[in-house]
Structure formats: C-alpha cells, structure tokens
Amino acid sequence: DTVRMPSRYLLERLPHGRTAVFAPHGIDRSIAARAYPNPYRPGRISCVSIGSMLFDRTFFQLAAQLRPDIDFHIIGAGHAADGLDAPNIIIHPEMAFARTLGYLQHANFGVAPYRDANTPRYLLDTSLKLRQFALFGIPAVCPDFALNDTAGRYCYRPGDAQSIGHSIDGALHSSETIELEAHSWPEVVQRILTPHAYPDTHV
Image 1 (cartoon, rainbow, N blue to C red):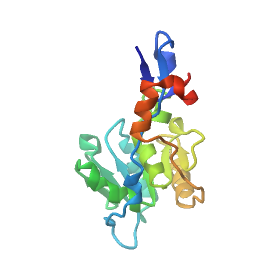
Image 2: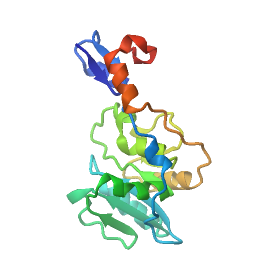
Image 3: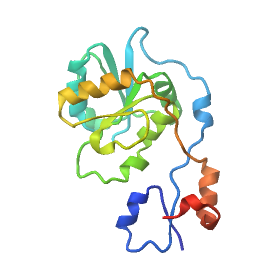
C-alpha cells in the first residue's frame, strides 16, 4: 500500500509514485547528548571512518602521506583496508555500535571514503556515515558526488591528492554550525502510517 523512501532521489527508480511517501532515516538524538571516553592518542589530530560500503582505500593511501600529523582511524572496513600500513593509519576490526560513539564524539572530522562506482544520488540523503558525523557536529570529508548543501561537508575528487588535501584543510578549519535535521524513529513511523497528516512526506 505504501512505499517509504528515505530519499526523494529514489522516486526515479520506482515504476510509479502513486503510493510513495518521503520519510528520511530517523535517529536517536540522545546518543550524541551523552559523554563517551576519548579513545584517541593525546596531542594528535584524529579522524574516523566507519564501515565498509564502497570503501576507497586510495583515499587513505594519499591522505596519510599528505598529512603525517593526522591519525586516520578506520573501523570495520574488513578486507577492503588490507595493505594499508602507514604509521598514521590505525585499523580497527568491526566493533559494537556503542563502542564507535567515542570515536565519533572526539574526532576532529569524519571521512566517508566512498568509491566512485556509478554511485546513486540517493546516497546524498541515506549515507549513515554522513548522518552520524552531522549528529555529533563534526565536519565530514567526502567525495564530490556525495556533496550537497548540508553544512560541514568538504569534498574531494577521488584519486586526486591535491583536492584531498584541500578537503582535509577545510574540515580542520571549519567554523560552520553542523546540525542534523532528522526525526526520531517514532516520528518516522507516524509519517509512514499516516503520511496525509505530514506535508513533508509528499513527493
């Protein structure tokens, strides 16, 4: 009866839009309101990447050489991170979601190192990495195809060292107020059950 889309860009992939409603992913805001232990080495600039989806290892190969003053923490990338062995690349195995929260809260910036593989545009809205960075108010470094008008995103061209350097500099010097506009999951459920009551669900 109803197709719930977390991004309006998904509409072009549906055979029709008659039953579609727009309801972005929800989030529990209380997660970012708590204090978590700082897992990073004192005195070091630290960034974090979490997950393995479309993981582009070349970003870290280039970035680690460009910025030896930064520790690049990679969590749960699996075999995609095999062979990354620079002194300032720290690879962590997959870990429980709760354990990742300290890495997010205390990072200077986050990295969403998506590989360019004809990536669909709905990633702009559905990337959990980018949403988590915004929830914790930290800047995000991401490829140019993941850039939109969301505050705090700094883009690079995949494989281009110069643009990677510029994006990292932008993130480190960011003065933007970064806030995530997102409903709670109960609010998302209400939009799915009674979309006619919420004008923002219209597509």
